[in-house]
Length: 238
Image (cartoon, rainbow, N blue to C red):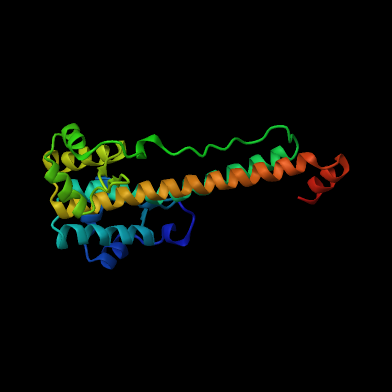
């Protein structure tokens, strides 16, 4: 997880429960459900971070203000934890690339590859009638979900809706949430908002990693063209 101050476990369960106006037993229930993930002291005492407190307040908002059932809350918090963890994964990837750069300073013939291809799942290809058939829904339902911003189809040059494989995945997920888990529309909106945020964050992080790899490639290519003496001087200066 990200190594910022928000993730530092500092609050014992009684203090955390007081901060969010819940009973400590409720916090234990949410932990068993995987909705929150408190840390542990060396003596195995639960310790909650500021991010845990934020998550608990979000759970209370979902259940008390939006009427989302527990199955819906579980989906929301699972996605929220994925977002939290992604930042940590990105930081680890940056550290790996920097380590790779240091190694390549010793063997410049090995250059990192750069893959700038667009994920084919995001390519808009299905017209609304085909998309509706694929997910066993009425086209009007897809239009409703678009107005609710649960899905975001692309448009052709003639403004025709075009759905991608990722849109189809999202529509199937909406059907699972509503039909199998009984999540209300408010809960589905929260879940899909997080799914879109997760997709966008992942794409942004991958783009940043590619940009860093391109920068490494450019620098290593320049380094390879330097005379041997300047290469050694550059390596000594790192």
